[in-house]
Length: 387
Image (spheres, rainbow, N blue to C red):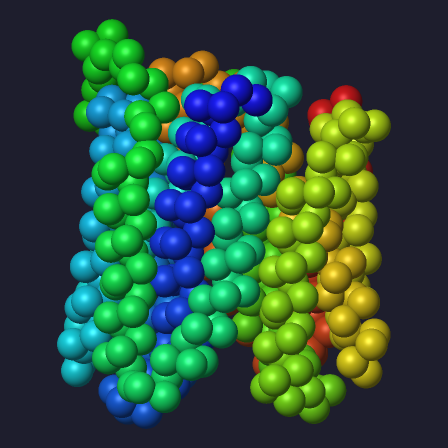
């Protein structure tokens, strides 16, 4: 890659990482904040968590469309401002409705991921695309590793300090983007685009068949991952009696393995295999990990299973994003990637709902077996549809 392209990739990586670091600080403490401060029940906490993804589902396509019209940088800056604002509101939250408002604003701010993906697609060739998308995945992983660790330190100073710290990180990311992030298309001319104010997801049926297939695959993968968002901690704590510190280590392993797979392993695999074969291999790896989670009865077994699962899930997402972006014409990149992110947000809503329901009412193995079953079906689907 050329030096200026590497600098742009480094800038978007830093922007996403700092933003996700602030997000990672806040998420682990939301349940305790709700119960200890606001005195709300588990169902209300679930709504507060879900509303973030609901806001993403609604606004991601629109923000992607606006990034096609006005440029990626402007949308990234705007959404980072919203993220910072949401954390400030959280810091002063004393009622449940204020919490919901802050999470909704934060969900809209989370729309910068679609614009960031479009930014990567703008500045990379098709051959470099998967590696570029992997950088965003790595930024996610690192944010979720170090965010909760920083939150665990800041909790000693109270929830207000956590909110302000998260807001400060988002503001740092905002300032960094203003001064260092270059527009991905500096010669961009909005008048060249036949722009219509139309909610993009309404046009999903007009997309090419190959794009729809890839979006469906991405939706199933996201659902299978989201399916165990809450149930993994319940499995490890309530079924296998792992401590909170051990759970923290498992989550750190997920992040580290994901970052490794996206920055190192993916590059190696790309040298020997086609993207379709990489998707099939990583789907099988993820399916195996999901199926084995209910049998991780000791620390060594659970650690091994966690790493296997995280390698599969870590490879899948950037490769599929790269495959989708290659099918899109440049002036629609933000809009279509925004639709994909919107569908992913829907999967992150449905996944935890099924995971929690099946864990409590059917059996603790069911969420993991469900995800594994869908991944195996996906392998068959990929072989038939993507060859």
